[in-house]
Amino acid sequence: MKFRQSRKSRYLADNQIHNVAILGAGNGGLAATVDLTIRGFSVGLWSRRIETLRPIQMRGGIEYSGVFGEGFIEPTLVTKDLGEVLFEAELVIIMLPTSAHFEIGESLAPFLTKEQTVLLAPGHTLTILPAALHAGGVISPEFCEVGTLPYICRKDEYAHVKISKCSDYLPFAAFPINRTDEMFSLVQKVFPKIHALASPLGTVFTYMNAIHHPPATICNAGRIENTDGDFFHYFEGITPSVGHLIDYFDTERRAVAMALGVETKTFVDHFHKMGYTTDEARETGLAYEAFQQSVPNRFIKAPKSLDHRFLDEDIPYGLVLLSELGNLAGIKTPSIDAMIHLAEVCTGKPYSIEGLTLERLGLKDKNVDDLKHILNNGF
Image (tube, rainbow, N blue to C red; front, side, top):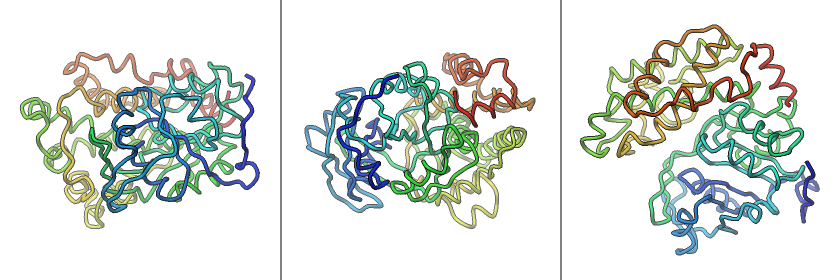
């Protein structure tokens, strides 16, 4: 692939990030735009849909409340023109649903320069993005990612975002692995809470939404459909029995991780390290207590229907991947597999076919050593 020339390259001159492109104007995209603008970065915000951007354009910016106080910020740029938002960006942050990672990779390929760093926030889709960049003409694709969204946040239709909490712990990885140190030193200037992991497999196993959103949603399906989600999803929807189910999913997640040589914390330890629950909840080791004592999540409402990312994203791009990696490593995941099946029955959606299967990842007929070789050396 032939890279375009960038107009400026302050990044090369002083190893700093000045201009950031945020791709995605959802909850996380707006929160990041607010955070980075307040901290002095020049931020360009992009969305695939003009309808998503229109409230921001009409108001001239984004209103915010929560951990940063209350205020109003004006991004440097708000656009649906991908080339425009990428033009001078040193850091490109993809804050889109995981289902869009392949599509955005193909779209990015013609515009990226060698000087730009691509960050998935969150990532945990393993080789999908580099495969898409490679398909788009990038000979040796590189990227980095964090395993979770950096914020607990919710936006509304009036260009307002409430940011309840910034994560105290952001697991970080790079592809290929030999680029970790360089990318880490760069991204840490933007997200100082990142912590480097040994490989992108580490961020896959810190995708905790996959083990608590689906069971809490399916177990509360009747209540969701009867009330249009008019209850507190985490505080009321995760009862002791639902919590036990999450804990069991967690044991299967950790068993697959161990078989692949990945060290990972329990869900409750990870949740606590991010700053989302109390010391007392951590001592119990129970997901139920972790959510009962989670102040940032206390008043978040449930989905209005089952047609929601808690299933449509967290199952095909979370649970399906855990199941597939379990197959690769020879580890059974019966509870996770059952949840995938039940969600398919309830929604009529073929999650196990359309999700992150080994075939879609380019790992069909590969073994564990093959996977590690790709992560270490890239394409």
